[in-house]
Amino acid sequence: MKKHGTVPQKQDTTRQALEFGAALLKQAPHLTPEEMQYWIKNQSELQATLAKALVIPDPRRELERFYLEVFGLTVDFSDLSIPEKKEGFNWLTVMLQGLTANRLFDECKKRFAVWRYTNDLNAIKSVRTTEKTYAISVRDRIEADEENKNKSANDCAKEGINGITLEERLFLEVFYHWRTGKHLDIKNATFCSGSRDSDGTVPCVRWHGDEMDVDYCRPGSADGRLRARAAVS
Image (cartoon, rainbow, N blue to C red):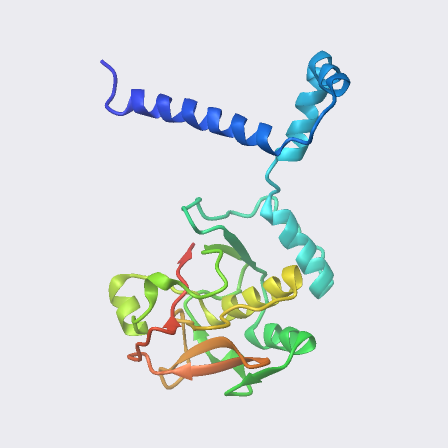
């Protein structure tokens, strides 16, 4: 007996293959008859060329290059355990052992104007720490999660939303600026629901005017422009 869903799954795979083939042909450069005949006769070379061009790079390699170029550290994440893939969570974030909020803030300061509400960001406690290297995945968006607008840190805790920490948000700012020269949270703010200051307040990060601000809000504060970034860990 066939399991329920087997036939539709095969049909979906076939349709996807056809759509991929059509997309490949659409984006292919204009080839002369002689060039097309060359590739027809040399299909093994064509296969190798397509494999090299279409492979999706391992994001761990880009993060290794980031740590080398930004912090001067040679790292190898080949054996690092990374989160299972979840739709929409396409930004892999690797927090290196010993990386602190203050160090990340200082790196931001080297790159652009910054402001923080307290001099010692390391005093803020987070649910995940860099006692050892670890990885999370977050949504690949400039603005914090639309899904979490109008939800306070207390709401997120009740709903089991795994919000990012202050260290993770500062890492994202440095990484995104290194990669693009641009900034995150231009219109809204990420409140780092995975972190708390000693008085229970929640650190928030945004690009404000021409600088990056690290501010704070109350754990019960809720606003459409104040949002948590969920993490898969």
